[in-house]
Structures are given as C-alpha cells and as structure tokens.
Length: 186
Image (tube, rainbow, N blue to C red):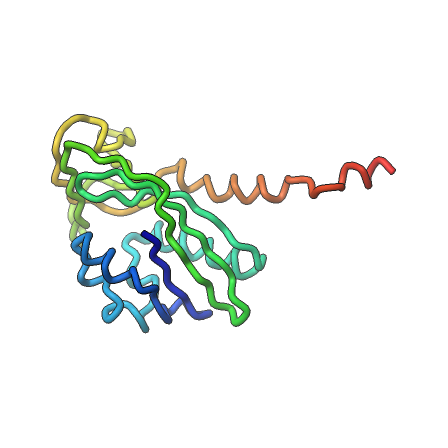
C-alpha cells in the first residue's frame, strides 16, 4: 500500500493520498488520519529531536539540490517487520511530495508492541529508521530475540542510520556521468 503526503515550503501537510486513512486505522493510528494531520506541521507528528533533525536535513537537501531522495527504513506492526522506502520529491513551489513505498513484509509469531515513553521517563532508545532498540549498550532487533515484548521507548537514531544519508549523498556525488570518462580522455 502506498501512502503519501504533500508539504508546503514551511513543512505544513497540505494533503494526503486516499490510502492514508486506511493505513492509519489499520495500525491503531486514529490520531494520524487526514482530519488530524492536514494543515498541521510535519515536525509535530514526528517523535524525538534526533528524528526531527534527520527529517529536516533531508527536506532541506531535497529543496536545495532540487533532486529527489530515497530513504530506506522500517515501519513495523506488532507482528510484522516491514521495509519501506520513503521518496522525497521537490516541487516547484518549494514544497515536497513524500511517498512511502512498501518493499517487503515479514510476518512473525512474536508480538512486539512499541509505545512512546512519556517525557522524562527512563526508557530504552529505539531507532526510528531501523527499529532496533538499544539494550545494555547494544542495538538489537526486538523481532530477533525470540520473545514477545511490550516496549516503552524514546525515539532517536542509531549511529548507523545517522550516517546512511550522508553516505548515500556522497555516493551520488561521486558517480561519474555517462560519457564523462570518454570526454576526459579525448
């Protein structure tokens, strides 16, 4: 299922696609339905300062370069690991269209329920990109330890996911355009 939204130049949500509400409702997200988010600021819908900064940086890069960007991430349900790609496309008026493409689903017999800890509550960190949880100094995938979990977490980014966009951007900058090697040797 494709979900998408359009942002204005100030990161206010202008519109969502028709499948948006169904996805929200299927995932216990009534507060994410169109009537709750359209007109609001994107950053108000994102939990965790590090995650907001990450998204702000990507939006800025898309606007400044005028190039689309694709960001792989996980968005799990309690019983399914799901891999997505978020595609950010610049619009002529400074807006950005953001679409989320489901790449794969992996059902599990486990139930991993994740909720956001209250401000000031002591809780494990959870990476909002790869869904790993930091326990005893180690980032682990909660689906891989073989037990059901009910987690209260603080949303952040692990070091691997913080570096991934920079590495993708550098790789894009280092690509040699078609024909460039022939032109250089002529």
